[in-house]
Length: 133
Length: 135
Figure 1: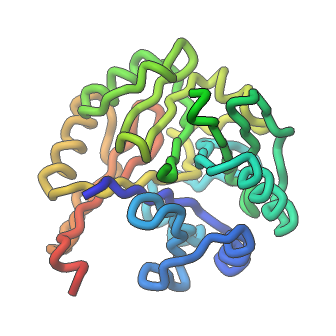
Figure 2: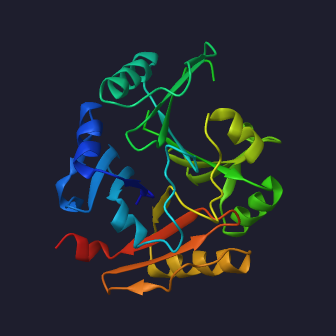
């Protein structure tokens, strides 16, 4: 079986965060979604994000929760199928209340941009021309 | 092409961090590794972690870099193939200078334990009995 990964991220308002990522086109697995957490499907069978309420996230750690709007521990970078997918996701994220922390980077064979979600977590989006690579 | 995810994580000492993840049994992609970063291959073609020096990581963001030993923004949870794999990875992590923040949780059909790497980033390892999850 392929390795599966779950990125666990704390969120302040689970419903708002679910609405945010739904607006970006992601769906949730209802089997692993309740009032404390929501399982967002990034790639079925391999990549998921678990959006967890801060109190629930806190039960897993013995340190304080970082406020991601103030500081960053991780950049979650997702590959995209095209430049258009990168641009479209960033546009949807901004429309849904996120922000773009920087301008897009265009290296011709590679194109990247990023958005910050409602809680300040940073998602990088990258498209690479596989023929050029 | 399948979706890929890369976790970019800041590290204080790239060489020590590479040694840490190598001792857990992970390989690296030399094509995208250099003085500022090293790519740990978790699942070829789909899941990677990019260990990035703090200085380089800082150049990618407009906020301060979290000191993960003092607080966490993320827990990376990796599904394992067996309960032995969970125990073995945690054991290797502790031997290599990491720590485990909580004892192994055994619910019979599911086993989980986490480790903290040299920089305080949290990795959780979970095995679920495939027969139990289909019931």
